[in-house]
Length: 372
Image (cartoon, rainbow, N blue to C red; front, side):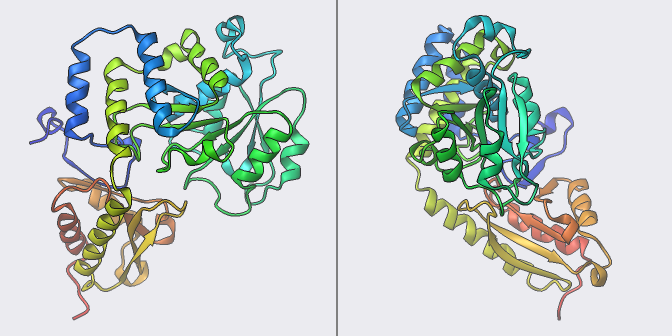
């Protein structure tokens, strides 16, 4: 029995991915032990934040880093930093930024909901979001035309949630930002490469500690030293409502240490093989087609994509998803394309034999009708 089952909650099989709604990641034993030790001791928090930033920067190869409660908090704090520029009077005034240089330019196709609206996180940091271009087409002139004396920063979102075509590229946006002497903030919350965006020209890059890194609920911003110092000052302002605990900070440090020393390519291939096995276990079901697809945002994640012939099967993808959730254990799958009759299985959080439980449940739901 899991600790959550002892509270009367259902056991969950997470085939959806590193999703906040399911608790993001199950931390490794070493991380949990590190957190337990940290929770039982005292430390001067400002010093811990500085030391953690120094350690994280060594892994990201940025000048410095600032720990956060998560990537969403990282957006608000980064925006606040670019608006206040270290001025403590302005730090204490936020989120009221009236009269300040507070406009944050974002492509319309990047103005997404990741569980909450991106633009709301910008507003929490005192920013005034300026959406440019169209939902399916943004060009450089849209961004440059929106820059004025009120512009504080440009914001680029790297996520599978965003429109994946017709957008101004990261590199082009970095060039625009620097041509106009403006910082570029990159939300790379779930990205696996924790060096790439800073090395290629971003000024502040935001990561989730609980996604690819498999740490506790946490995050960090890495980037230019001066901008990071402005980020840390937000803990005397809006960041106070977003503070990370000492044990979460220590858990993040252990998780990033383990992550940096893993063979992530080998892990991705192992997970791909797990999905190929699942596809074989579903091969006898008719009215569905199973294929292995790489993550739409280009990450090295391979998922089993199940396309349902809803008319022939007389059941929709949405109905299958609901039946999977309602069972015990409750199975959560990836439902981003359910409107197209597609559900996906993400292997990263599956435990031993979870793939077999999923295959058995799908056989039950689809009535055991086979191609035989």
